[in-house]
Image: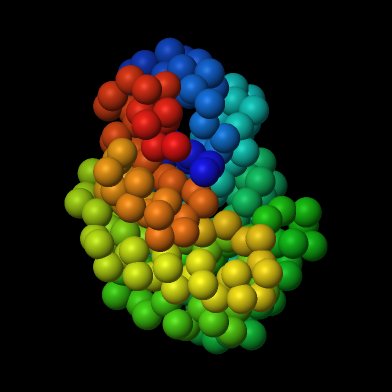
Length: 214
């Protein structure tokens, strides 16, 4: 199980302290949420802040684009240091457009992920199972931290686990929203391989919280 603390919940008044704790916590990834105020009703980080994270942490930079125009922003954040770009199925107009962006991300030497919102049926991903390195199931409505986990996400995780296994895919199944030790265990049992946690990690002891998610 990979743990990807979401720096949306990091206490920026204690930036250096919490980054040092995060680097030593055993977490493998940093989850970096990009929101444009259009696709979701919130604004977050730009590329310069990602560049700063790249300077202070060696962890894998998992960038989640919650934006209306992922084609534009994918290049912006790849140039800023993203190791992986995940964009939303709902932000794209066709399967061809989705595959084209995934191929562009791969051609840029990065990993590609695709995400679905809670109200999107997981079966829409079936034609795309061979095109991505990661499938992100949102277990809350994207846009804000601290929301309660939606149990319906577990069926989506199980569906992905079953279908990816059928094609012998090594793609990751990531879950984001309301993750703590209990919901993390449920996601792991359903077949998830990456857990995103924000408030739970940064508002508790970082190392202890990370260890409890494994």
